[in-house]
Image (tube, rainbow, N blue to C red):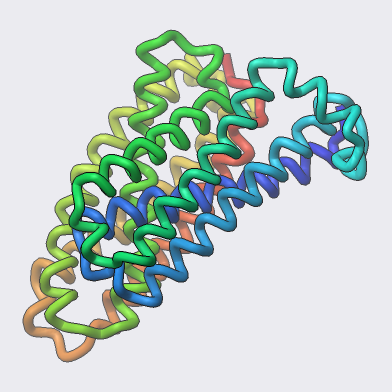
Length: 294
């Protein structure tokens, strides 16, 4: 197989992960924590950027995956004869379905842009957005190691992806849309809600992560002595640092939100969290193209 095509596939997949996290996490944040954010230019631009990353990343991932499987260089993505065989395989059809779901997601985002907070509060819009989000998450899982796992483990993968998107995507909305506005009323309303959501997300993510790690690695020896295991360890270290920063942010919200003169300390902590979260997404892109430790 072409290592150059694999490298480009990893790069495209990282953008796909970033877009998925921003859009699904952002939609959940706006729908359930901050409906007024649908009228914010910052949140709209963030969702649009997320959609662009997700759509472009998915299309590029499909193309570079085809070149990688065919053992061709990255330039082969422009050769239709390389792409066609992938559509005949279940794996390729999943990629194509994912592209169609991103197109449908554009309709959901367009309605949110047009109607703003009214759409975010509407249960019909929430159901539509939720259906698209579920489809995007399910196809995301089907393009990784989930195909080799039993049915109950696939459900755990889905839950893992959902929680990551809600937690990390919400974190990015908080950093790039809520905090820059410096609206104390909005912060007082949104931060405690997100803090509780993050706490539940971390607990769920920890349990789901342990189950998946055991399914894909299987032993301590494989965790230490295989490439997949070492990548997983790197991800776990970043996750642990992310938890520490998240705890610092929660402590600030609980103790200083109503008395602090500025939110500079919180902004620095959330910025560090976001950087680590993006790094975790990058490691996850490497994991899905690396053979499991078992």
